[in-house]
Length: 134
Image (cartoon, rainbow, N blue to C red; front, side, top):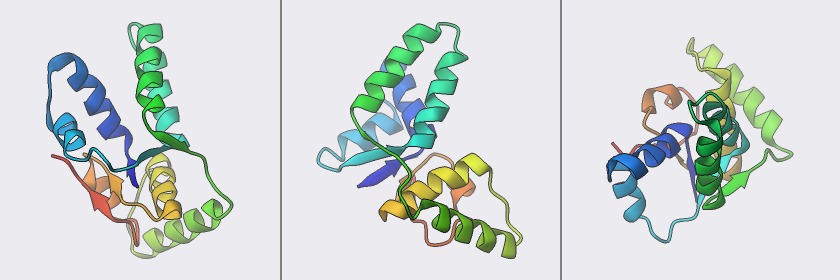
């Protein structure tokens, strides 16, 4: 399984209207790979849709995209993994946004790599395998 970051899903949605790009090409090369997004990615996508010029249309596009993947809620180990990762990041004098760490923690909890366009946002997370498609 591969966890998808918000950046990948947004790129994929944009490419649906503008034509195939790196996200679409990556997805076409992974036909049998199970894909997931964390609940936090779903939240970011819904927030973006609510803020769009045509929110109802964007919400429908987001819901269609989410229907094609597993939406992964936090499990019972989530908080402990998050706390340990945050402490280690701070010990290394690094920084990460709360939402990015929540997304990374979901991937860590499931033992999955995270696919993102924003590699630098996630490289500070210990033990996280970060993939990119660009």
